[in-house]
Amino acid sequence: MKQDTHPDYHFITVVMTNGDTYKTRSTMGKEGAVLNLDIDPSTHPAWTGGGHAMLDRGGRVSRFNAKFAGFTGKK
Image 1 (cartoon, rainbow, N blue to C red):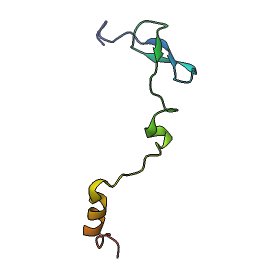
Image 2 (tube, rainbow, N blue to C red; image 1 turned 180 degrees about the horizontal axis):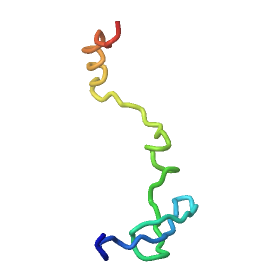
Image 3 (cartoon, rainbow, N blue to C red; image 1 turned 90 degrees about the vertical axis):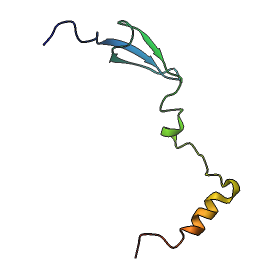
Image 4 (cartoon, rainbow, N blue to C red; image 1 turned 45 degrees about the vertical axis):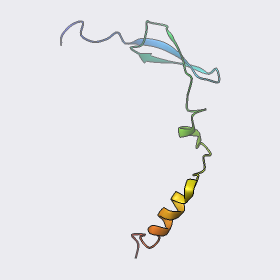
């Protein structure tokens, strides 16, 4: 294996949006660096479910459902 080809892999501290911290290994920064997250699993809709409802603007969803109502793929 070639020497000096791999990045420095060291411990950093990750601070989540609610203040919780944990240590992990990373190539970011230097040993002991702190990574402050703006988005994490406790706040991002991808992990929390989001609570978003699909909006039917201009009847697009209604038209789609009417056009493909008979196509279910089930018999």
